[in-house]
Amino acid sequence: MQGSNGVKLKSYVCVYLILEHAGKILLSLRKNTGYEDGNWSIVAGHAEEGETAREAMIREAMEEANITILPEDLEFAYVMDRKSPNRQNIDIFFKCLKYDGELRNNEPHKCGGLDFFDTNNLPDNIVEYIKIAIADITAGRFFREYH
Image (tube, rainbow, N blue to C red; front, side, top):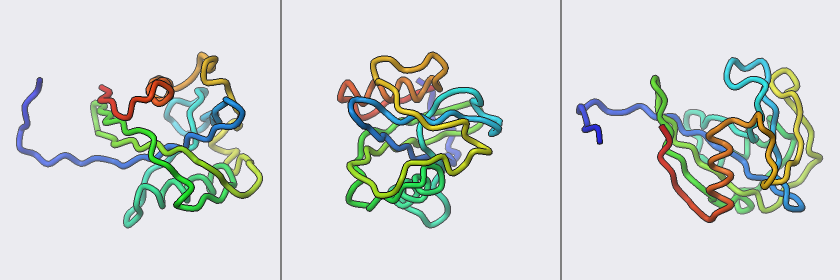
């Protein structure tokens, strides 16, 4: 275990949408972002200045997938404390209980498509920490530290 060096940590709050339908989960194919391009992830994004995690998730769902979600229709599912060499992310995953609107890829310049996949048969080219989070959520776990 590594001890503290006394320097306050700057963390990023990231939000992720677990949208399920008929035993499948919505995935988003990353492209032209410079991070994990060509791999499947889920609708996600960073909280912006002044936003709560729930507000950020509602905004990202509209920006990326064209759906409107009410705050009461987002249910906490999972947190991942994810460290990388240059930053730390606090990843908050929400299950979407219901939404309005027609599901559509609103960001074709950054997303190669949206599709539903069986959680027991995810594509091979899925972002590793997303795959782990989905497995943890499916197993009823609520937290993981990921390095």
